[in-house]
Length: 330
Length: 223
Image (cartoon, rainbow over all chains, first blue to last red; front, side, top):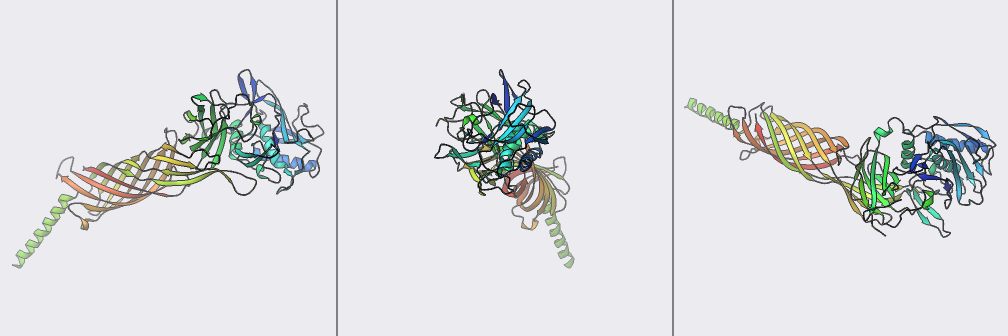
């Protein structure tokens, strides 16, 4: 789900998977959490046959197909999609087909788009997923973007990230606007929950955090052997901190990949890292609404941004020894 | 008279040759040495943790500058004198340097820290030794060395290795302390070296060549 200013949770009864990088959507059954993912080798999707001002149905389908192609082109992931055809069905119809289309949702006046799922809660298999784009906003499919409109392909690429089972990334910086919403200063992932704004086409291009997330969910044959993971725990006065945002920065590659301390006792794991030494930075989840990531219950934001005075090595095909990051109250 | 003068001259030359033979290891005999020294540090590169913006300029989350610190090193070497001037040598140098990444200018004012890991570093190299016999002083023979080799660095925890190569240029002095005309052990000597090691690959940030000075003092046995 992507919003213009603030986020409205649309993915009901889904939680974040603990102990993983980025955020994978999961299905909860008792204490068991199963990642949501497609089991089909080629996921079929439909586009609605209705356009909006400035975007025809054909242009809409082309922009969404480009978004799908972006995810399908990730070399370390094995996930494929197939456009089946146009449909008169509306997004969010529980009809057994995955539909992308425009819909007017004036009550969601800060939501650009959202993704819904029908899932098998036992296996986590996604059975159907629909994506709507809010037609109360103005949209563009111009190759270079349109300064007064939101870029459809960028938002589609974000929503397709949800469509394949990814949650939101917290790699980004925002500031509070006078109206109470947030303005994005910078982001490091297409899956950051808040758009960079009208006119920009930056989110047509996946970032390393997005690539690591989809590759971890749909790994190709070599992914697990050629990448590494780090695992640790965020603690304050010896007690685990739940919901801290942890990033791993590789100075050699310049790549930033993030995760959350949402495992038991404040544990986290960040997978899909280029093997090598990483700088670790921990911050409270304060650049977007917490409920845009997971249930806000028990999430701790009362601690200072902390840089770990150790370099943590992600070995190829394995994980680091578990380490602690001690944070102090604000 | 003329004959006597020539004879004296020959004797002087022989004596000089004998004296040199007594202060150099015999040719084609293996010299094995071990020593300690210092392997100098070098900057490995700078890198900013950048995020995208809606414009063209990136947004810096924090800045890093990484250095490999200098440290004590162990040096094992083997050498052989091919001629009175030229020899071959091979070195294995082991050190455990710290890699130190200074993290500064955090956008949310996190206190700056140095993030550190300790490497296990091996240099395995070989090269040529040129002895400058004409500059011998008090039995110490100056040397000029040059060669190339292999760099292996293991990250902390020994779970990941990185590889590279090196070229080196250097110099030093060597002195034979004791020689025996026969036997398994033919002699004992001391050696001092300084080197400029130009490393590529291995643990680095900017993939550029970096210069590490090293120095060592060692003793060697002639077989």
